[in-house]
Amino acid sequence: MTSSAWESALSQLDEASRIMNLDPGVHDVLRNPKRSLTVAVPIKLDSGLVKVFTGYRVHHNTTRGPSKGGIRYHPAVTLDEVKALAMWMTWKCAIAGIPYGGAKGGVVVDPKALSRDELERLTRRYAAEIGPLIGPERDVPAPDLGTDEQIMGWIMDTYSMIAGHSVPGVVTGKPLSIGGSLGRGEATSRGVMYITEATLKHRGAKVDETRVAIQGYGKVGAPAVRLLTELGCIVVAVSDVNGGVYNPRGLSPTGLEAHRDDTGTVVGFEGGESITNEELLEIPCDVLVPAALEGQITENNAERVKAEVIIEGANGPTTPEADAILEDRGVLVVPDILANSGGVTVSYFEWVQDLQAYFWDEDEVNMKLRRIMERAYVDVLDIAEERKIPTRMAATILGVSRVAEAHVTRGLFP
Image (tube, helix red, strand yellow):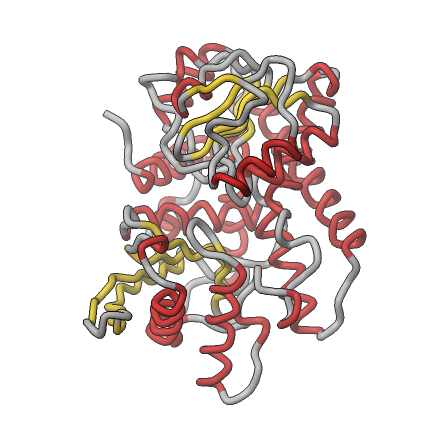
């Protein structure tokens, strides 16, 4: 049976703790989120009716600094999913070496079913409800699935109105006009590109002969198509929630983008043949980038994945059962907590710039991002090779060990 995201996160922590011989008390602390908040979010719909939505905000850990993590608007959001994503954020920040703990938030809603005014009212009310938990020194939200920079702008404004002065550092991933950072919009995708480049280099593979398939054509997948093509890779397949398109000779990033802008989907793009989302995962390619939802590669399809390398653009796209199958087959999985940490890294840069009220140009942002991603990749690789363990476990051990060290150093209050 396929695990839930929370069960997956716990099993990864438990296995890492066993390999590390982690102190049981520290292990117990890390297994439990520091705090979980469930809120009712009542809003007045355009029809005049009042509807109540459910929202969450979870702080997994704040030992290394304020907690950090996205907010997702999706009908399938659950508290367990938010807890798992918060835990993964803790490890992700520690692996990147940035001074944050992990958090995550979400509202159980289909944002496409709301008008823009309803979406703004929902966001502002949710921001007010989680207000006691967030702040530049406490917890710094960012966009995730179903949210964007405008939603971050509304959260920043709501928090600022309550505070009585502008507080740009309360969220990241917001518009440039109110303290956003250059390079933030496609930072996760750029990080995926840097990690893909580092992986191919380490494996001695030729970039211009590397065929890539990307599942998901949203905030991560769409820029990744362009960036990986610019790197020299051949992107042979792309899909979104409606289906996908495949061309063994490569897809045109500009053509795909224009088609998506016209029709709202990559389905029907004339530069390739139609495939399903499921077929994309099993397409002949060298590198597979799952950049959609969690739980996409499972024990049911892991045997049929043809890629030699999986670079996880999404959070938790591979279940533990699938991990074991891929490991047996010799498929290299570069885990989410390493591969997609570009977003939180540039979020950190944005927060630093907000606190200093001093902003950097895009080249500086990208250069600093590359340096952090490449260093993290080497750190994880060293542990994997030294202990002869899969990359995900090496990354988890690196993240857990850094958080555990900070916890032991600080000690227990009171």
